[in-house]
Image 1 (cartoon, rainbow, N blue to C red):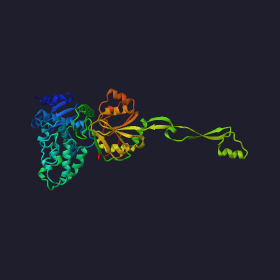
Image 2: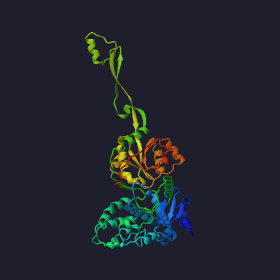
Image 3: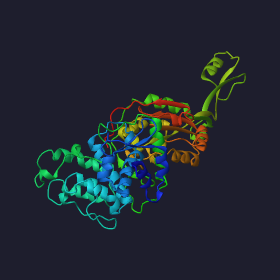
Image 4: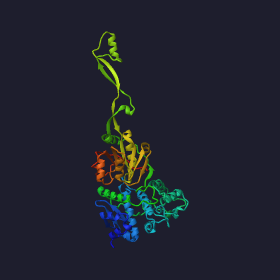
Length: 468
């Protein structure tokens, strides 16, 4: 059986709907990559090294896990980051994905791809695989390398147990731990043998992570693949004990980032907001304001005449017209604050700190609730935005924004996004066309999905990456 046929036949009971997807993408055998990778230089392609499959993924279950590992990188937005991906990023991504797959497929027939490929007695490679004899119904046993006594081992144990438990571990958990440990383990550590430590950049990871990995050169092809996979993953059976914060249906994670405050985008956002703001006349007293003073002229002296007329009469001069003043209710212009939908999916994680700062620069022009969206919409207050509170599932689905707009009868909105939101349906196109919609794009963006419904657009000026 050729490799392409093996790929089509390896999905269990075909319940995950990926066979149909793979028929839309090319499956290509190549030795140009170490194991497997997804490419979107035109039509999406799944690249697989046949030698690697023969040596490490010879069973249908292992081959399925290898392919699923690569597809998860697309689903979770790892292929669309706006910052250069480092060895630490790749390591963290793989820790999260491997643990997620193990939760979905805990049988040793599937997890053996990780346990056979990665050495559990070496740090930090042990984080890329479940412990020996691991099952979902009992606490994870610690790898032997984490049973020793050395500085930082207690925190390592906590993160490892969380990673392979019902509680789960987030990207932030791993990012908060490993950078300082990498620096610590660059020198000999008392209580930890040097033969049991490997530098992250020297770990051979599953999939394509090096310079040989094909780039995602075609945003249209990538958006097609990401949208198709997200739609499929959204309908997957919900796990009994899902990992916290790993970006699929209902897996909402919470974290806090450091916000980059700058007025660099204030003018752009103010312009976009003013163009879509709903403007109308309302009675001033309905807003709690007072009455306006109006001056008028009359041939009859008013009871409360102008001081100038009184003086002239005292001197014997009678004005032709007297000056008078009166109070009356006024009408004033009212601008309805614009609803901001802020993309917090995995593909904007590298610039999320700057996006938060950009929205804050708009000040009182925006609605007091900011609508964070990924595959769900989560409303936060301006005060939470200021402190960098993030709620995200990692993926992106524009339908959650459409539902929120429709249910809340939103008339004017600003989307802050990279544009990778998937293809809009006919119903969504109609809905968004009825809204005064502006879009503020990140510098690396894909404008096509929202091009037909955005009345005004602009590109933000962002600097730096996420500090979270």
